[in-house]
Image (cartoon, rainbow, N blue to C red):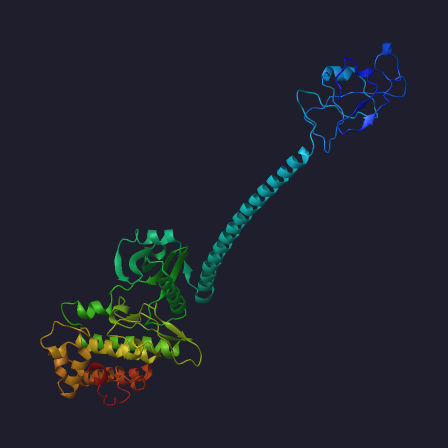
Length: 451
């Protein structure tokens, strides 16, 4: 080992840190001239570089007595000096740069991976939201366009209908998935009935779409006319012509006195013609699926019209039946095959009409516990008992009626409510029998159902 000297230019030789020996370190200049090279072409410039780390640095000498200022005034041999570290207790770094660079690379990789994952998740959520929104918009737009193009219906905005109904103030009726409100359209001062879907559930939406699609295909004097619709997001409304005289249920069951016989016969034929149109005259045959007095409405002239097509079913060409859905029509009006969730056909509507026909005859509900005797609770079984006993006058409570017409209507009603669908007449034959142009056979007993 050697100790530092005052003048580094006096060094003749040394042993470095790596134990390599050097014995010929002679100056090529006079001491009086200072530490400067005597060769004019040899020029040395010492520059201070701060915050610099040197890769694979391997110094072999150190001069503790020099500081930055002294180092810049002295010349060190060019073959043996390239850099100098100046400072207190600064060891020559070995491989420190590699560790720092390795740590930096790992940190950069971790940050890049994390940012990439976050960006991917954000992009995935954004894309999913976009496609869901676009599919919903496309769905509603497609339904609206279909309604406009195929059914020539008017499209209303929600604000228009809210204004037309005075904030949905006057309620006309209520069903499983919404209510019907009275309104007025400004143009022409036309009174309308607005049906609003209030429960945005899958079944309710499906029935809303079915009702709009099916009734939009129909046009008959004995069917309620659909004027337009509204589909704005979850808001779904149908606009119908207003039926000023309410429902057949109100007329038969809630009135202080019975409607006159002639009007009841005409209403029965109106209902039969409306069903016949759906079954045979409409371009696409339709099973209504929910025929009952509440769904038969009366206009200004007391013309009966079928309404509420939410349970209706379209029949393809050569298709005779369809699978019954859960829920079905109201009990008492629902055919046995529908209650058993079997294949249903247009004969299910015939059954429902038979029950309604007997209610029109007797002006009472098919199930009534407020009667004088227990035999009268079930209307259909009581009517058959009166028919067998030839006591049809009991059905009309002494009302003046045409007895032949009464008997004809009773027999047609009993034929329609047969348990076996094949024994029920078609609606075409029902009309012919009610009109008196076709003989009415004697109906068999409906006891398998009512016993």
